[in-house]
Image 1 (cartoon, rainbow, N blue to C red):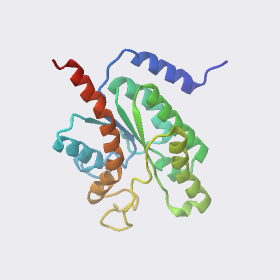
Image 2 (cartoon, rainbow, N blue to C red):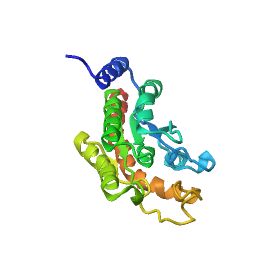
Image 3 (spheres, helix red, strand yellow):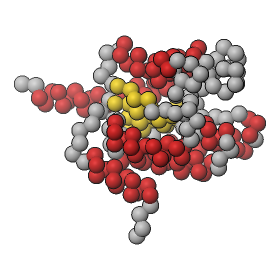
Image 4 (cartoon, helix red, strand yellow):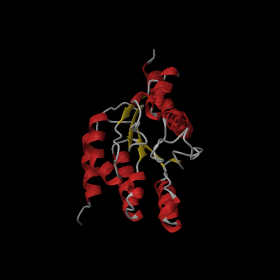
Length: 220
């Protein structure tokens, strides 16, 4: 039977990771401009704030931000295998889809790309956190609802945790949105982190007992 590209990539990644011990708490963020701190110094972005929070909590988790402004889900699929091989993350946060929606790309295409990213990440031994997105209503009710539902359905199908909407709670105002009316300001970044944090914290905590048991096994 002919193997699909996803199957071939998964097999290659799984083989490369066999017998390799990677950092369980290395968090890889694969996103678009919303995670790349578009329009502001990078240290103001929610991903940098996440890194600062982990350091303040004296966590041994580290954050790798592989987000690129303008990135689509197809771009994420193309870049992910190399990122997994290079960084060997314990957790992959997938924050993509907004640019697919803005360009009116077919929802099944978005869903398939995200599915590939979830399965590639798992084949590499990582947990996955999927970050959902909504788009402006002027794209039509049918498209906008199907767009957001694709994140919900994929998370349920693959049994991965979901942050329903990265920008949840942000009002359409000058304080939280830049002049383009799309990208959040620096003032909005702590709210975005707070939307992600509870679910991500649970994933990090779930990996902690394994680390503690490993230490206990080596103690005299």
